[in-house]
Amino acid sequence: MKIDLIPLPQTFYEQSTLHLAESLLGCLLVKETPEGRCSGFIVETEAYMGANDRAAHSFGNRRTKRTEIMFSDAGHAYTYTMHTHVLLNVVSNKKGIPHGVLIRAIDPIEGLSLMEERRKGRPMREWTNGPGKLTKAMGITLADYGHHFTEPPLYITQGYKPEKIETGPRIGIKNTGEARFYPWRFWVSGNPYVSKTR
DNA sequence: CACAAGATTCTCT
DNA sequence: GAGAATCTTGTGA
Image (cartoon, rainbow, N blue to C red):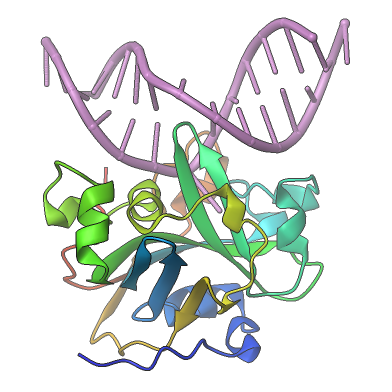
């Protein structure tokens, strides 16, 4: 499989958050590090709708040092830590509207030996089938906070068009009232790297 | 400055 | 299923 490693244009990120979350499925996420290049197709995402989404960090337009980047232009990287793990988001929507799309799972393509090293002892299927796992496998850290996805070392290129996409409630959020039932999770139907429902 | 909580993962039961 | 691991940020004194 040969793919052009040309980053998607800024305009790609300027669509509505839910549309972007769906459009990102099948795109290639690439991370270059001193150890080498890793990439994988995005197969699972979740939309976080800012002001009206209780489960979002930016609920009610809460603006802090951490959420600041979500108020910026679409296409920036929003990374943050969750206990011992780093999670990766793509900032979406217009400047001033703090929406984002969480990358939950990818299908590994390039840099397999490097990912195996970073995820030592796990079967390949479990290298990237979760938001904290894929950042570890690809070497994504807090240092990527605020980076823009149109430029190396962290960027997204065109991938393939998924045959079938499914949607459902998001995972891992609780005590957030109605927000936990919103069907804002998207995944490629049948892909083995999609994380399991709890 | 101290402390609590979290968009998770792993291990053990 | 439950509980721990272990780090950053947000909030309050």
